[in-house]
Image (cartoon, rainbow, N blue to C red; front, side, top):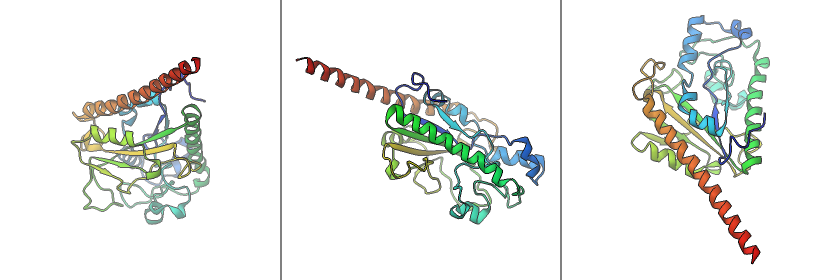
Length: 276
């Protein structure tokens, strides 16, 4: 469905929620070799919980692409070609997880991998179409790739790694300077790491390193900032974080509104000149 231009007026941003889903189609549940309780635990712990709510102001204004399924079903932010994906080569955690994220243990069989690949492909087709629609309307698009992560290191991570509060990653060719500066200003009292090389922004392949009017930024938030140590229960700082994200949203919205107003003023002034 095309964007409603009135609803998405005055902005070129697009929210991407690749890991916020928490479901698996029933027809594939029998593929999983761990117990149902283990599966639920892995899904909950490895899901970017509550990002729909934390980013609700941006989602409502800018529009979004969300993977409604658990990343234990498919992970849209891994390379589709397993031979290019280190997480698959080293840990069997490519776009199709064969191991569990919480421990080095077999997650499921691979008998339906080819069939499930169609879900992956459909997600990326949707992201491409939404990006293209933004381009058609605004002549530019910035994808805000939204994530959260556990403050506990998983088995496939370095165990002595000190984790930041916020990670921001981008490709220099696709850098949105204003967005990054706005995030840094709002989180200036937090431990923020830029371009850790742990994350890569997702940009449709047709535009990657070829169109400079496509921007993309990954923002990853440590779950300790808004959840209790169980990684499920909201803590007392939840609304503080949500308000900070809303402040970023307002600055982005005001920036794009001001840009449009200045453009309209320039066009009107040029029109007056043409009358003389």
